[in-house]
Length: 283
Length: 266
Ligand SMILES: Nc1ncnc2c1ncn2[C@@H]1O[C@H](COP(=O)(O)OP(=O)(O)O)[C@@H](O)[C@H]1O
Ligand SMILES: [Mg+2]
Image (cartoon, rainbow over all chains, first blue to last red; front, side, top):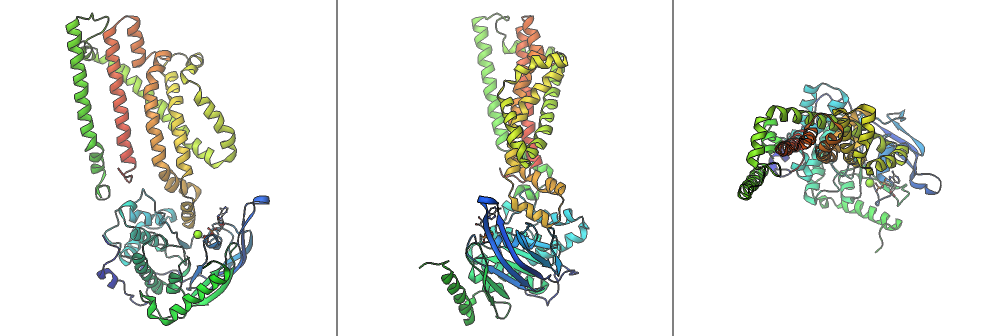
């Protein structure tokens, strides 16, 4: 099976801003962070990995963090969700201080991290099993998402029977099936080939346009950051701080070939210049 | 694609079928050939039965004394199951504890490794004094033999689970109990299972020796007693029965493995 066909591309044209999985409980949450800092280890082995950084992400906003490898992007994501405690600073989700890991979120990592021992659909249904929600109703939502992501027919396959792109689609379905208020993606397309990446980027944008989750998207791809985001935050080398914020004012949905927009190259060049100034690139 | 579209039936078929069947076939032919040569050689040289029995002797004995031999084979099997199950039930939680608690890893694990280096049968006489001669002592020796491989492989299984999986399960609001049952244990299962396979081999080897020294039931005991009576034919029948028990246990493990882990690649 290929990742996408023309037919399922067409079926994925947005049907207005309706939540495809029904009864949206969650439009996006806001994320506010102040002085967020992470130091791993202590004493002589202390390693300052991140910050301090401030974040102000509006409900339903699509924000990317871009920065060189090892600058603390993944760490930022873990701190923002409470999955790891910060060394200093604080996070508020929808105005409420974050003190423990929150579960109104969906996470996608670079590696699909699907469970080998569950079929595609059962990987998604793990959400239902753990949350103790109604199985039949949840299955309907999962099926709708599968259809939406071009996964129909792959339900009963094991992860190793799926292509890389499909695995990542399943992990996106897993992250969205419970209708979370925020979606966190850590270089989700980093391991995919360029063609698959362009398609899945578009599919994600479409899904986001309909559901308006708050998305924190971590990437080291300038094209992805500009192609998807409302706003791009550029991080410095380790310990990462946010050195620049770029609002991407391009119409949506954005085309496969971003070069259609002259502004695209301007945004891309701006990010290159910043990286050059930071010494990320040495030519 | 087979495991995805089919149910338990196909899984079982897969477990029995294909290369398994052909290897059984080849094995059977080889064994029959060996027995044939043996039979002919002994008949030709007219070797007395108290020195070496012919296959026709001990296979016939296997039949005529089937009640006796089956009874002992049953005890041997029960001893394997008891010792092995106990080993697994202790090894898996202990592996989890050792992996989770640094102090146990530094303090307890070296002790276990040291105990494992000791020949287990040496503990037999001590156990006999504590528990008396009987299948219990044999089961305890089997436990000691099968426990360690399960422990070691379970430890690496639990360790190798990607920590980001725990982030994902926590993002679902999973309790540590849920995370263990739904993520960590099944993710570690292929490792745990390969430990169990080695454990069963050790158990099947160990049980006969354990019964030699420490039991009053089972094939090992039957063979020792036959030896005391110079009953060579029964000793060989016992050997064949022990081999059959070993085959059954190893085969059962393969089937259990594919039934427990239909997702694993073959
Ligand atoms: N658990 C940890 N313990 C120690 N150092 C860590 C840990 N996690 C990440 N780091 C270090 O912190 C830095 C930032 O890591 P990360 O956030 O993963 O970077 P990025 O995602 O931007 O590549 C890296 O140098 C990494 O080695
Ligand atoms: Mg990272």
